[in-house]
Length: 162
Image (cartoon, rainbow, N blue to C red; front, top):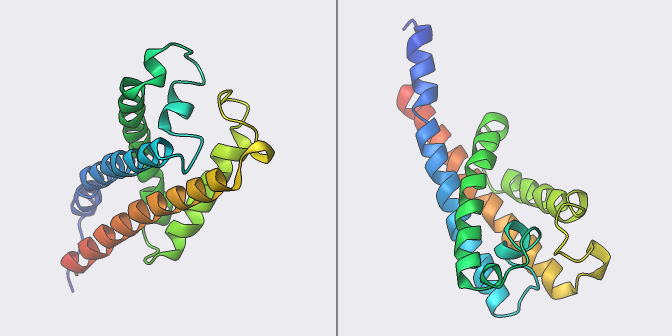
């Protein structure tokens, strides 16, 4: 029977943190870009710039491509925090279902609870069905990407240490 040292166990846990940070950053980058593309092709009336910049800045540059790029980068950085939160709470739950559920919860938080913060976004009951369906799907896909990647890395890490 192998005795596990506390420092060794702590080192094993911290080795997953850089992976989680990169998963969070690239998840925000990929799915933020997909949201911008969906907004460009009018699948949704909201895009990353609608949340990040346009709710606080009403300048001409924030409504153009530069505003979209800056917003995607900010979302990617915020996504690191969400990935670390997912790692802390749900890393032990493999599969798609935790990601799907967390995506729905995240969508609900952003579009329902944080609605007063985002003044540029119409209230939930004024959103058209295309916007609702597209954004729910994007949030689910984003959360499944984050959740599945983190739980896969965790399960792989556990398998290596056994």
